Length: 375
Image (cartoon, rainbow, N blue to C red):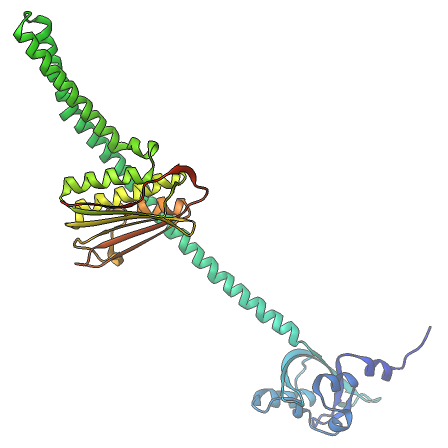
């Protein structure tokens, strides 16, 4: 088995191995020290150890001299050192006291290892942990905000459901109920009356009441979900509903359709219709508008819906999402992986824009063009 001298082992080491006198002068300098710091043995032997300590680190320089004198019993520490070409490097230093045969202190032996890569890794790891912590905090805040929005939406949906039930109950009681009561009275007159003009008149009234009753029930059903949406698609349903709202509220309405040669999937049609329905309802309730514009179209694989009015507008930064149903609209759009944008300012009207992915179109033609209903 080959034998190696201590000198050969020291010279072949990748670490810097050197010795320093109590006065701070270098007495030995191996090949590893030359590779790490750039100084040859001839350049460093007899030179102060302070050569490889940055000049601005005054405390480190003073502490270094104290250690080589043996006044500090320090064996291992991390430090910053200076190379010949002016680079600062992170190092790990191991000290061992040097003593002669009679035990007299003669300085220290140093083993210096370049740990720059380790320090860079630790710094990157620390930065990654900080970034992850920030992201976790942001995500937690987002989830908290989302949960808050969902609670508001849930409360609003329950409120809307109760309001809709109350409205339907009133309509059924006040209109359908009254018509059925009048019809019952007429039928009783027919049942107990004499054959002749009186019975014929009651029968005529009854038929008229049936017509009104059918109209009222059909209107209630259409308010819940227009059959046009299922039978003829989004454009026909929007045209019917928008014109109906314009007539009721005295608006001048402009409705335009672009690029929709085919019907889109039913969930997208329903979402677009409900967004427009909610937007027009808001205009009727709050906007005090005289002109309304509805646009629907297909572009770049997305179905786009835009509803504009010239009403009183509002400040979107202070909008009440739940009160005006905007949160519900936004929830509908996001549930279909779409985007919604609201533009408004006091006195400048409001624009609501939604874009939803079209996915695979259904094969059915759609009538396009622009239609205007003047109030």
